[in-house]
Image (cartoon, rainbow over all chains, first blue to last red; front, top):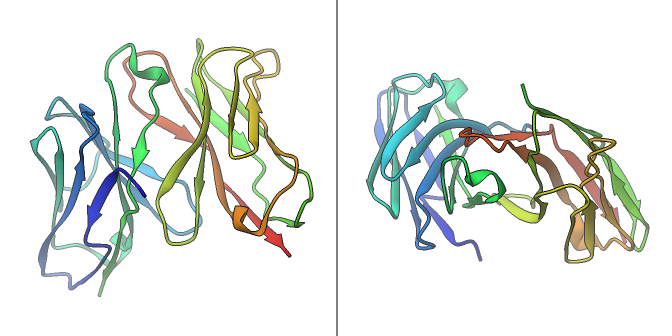
Length: 117
Length: 113
């Protein structure tokens, strides 16, 4: 069982819809991440939150809007997505950030499989 | 910048065969190295890690040794099972303030009974 929980597991939405992906962890981690993974490819980093503040945005289009309401929760708000945004969206968390974080692994959820019609 | 090169496969083995998946890296300083596994329909699971040269990570019969002299972190298992069928990703994380994991392209392993 994964310690990072993502909901929903599957989501189908139209290009004009607004939806949100949710992620929760109770490991006391203070860094949380959103990744996008296309089929047969490695995950691509989208956003990093450190102590509930956005620290990295990998030039992600504004139709993706992250939010970190508290240290355990991470949301990804979706609006006006394109068919090419169909992918597996993975949330991850890790124990520490900053210069000492290099040896801390990231723990991943099972992802939300998103399909844009 | 950092990069990871791993054999892309696919790799097809019979049950109880020996597995090696090669992984080499390019990085400044002394990165931490990881192997993640992704079973069909699931997210990534940390399989093992090594944080300094000559460290050996091990888990579930899998092993990998951090070889700084050859900048390698090859994954091995002595006897694979059907349940090991998955995609395996080698990854590194630098020591600086960079939070990013750099992944290899992944290797699909299929184990036949």
